[in-house]
View 1: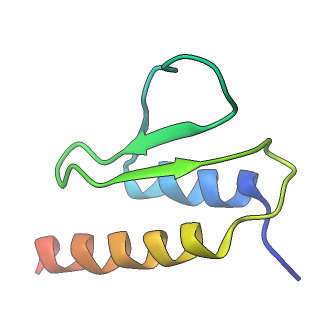
View 2: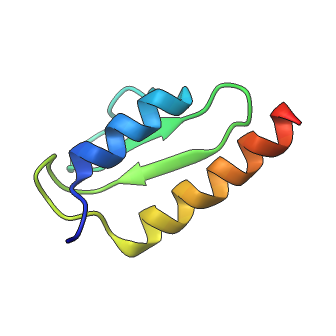
Length: 70
């Protein structure tokens, strides 16, 4: 079963990402990690399916955060 955007957002919040203020029109939301500067853009509403590239970005972010803690 495909994850929903709300699940991805919850995981981003748990990892310490912060929602940036909206910039203009559109449904994209930008989440940035304050220590690494990694930005992940999420398109759509909370109930929409997560795009495969957002899953890949999340895995990259997890790896970088793991390296920082080590």
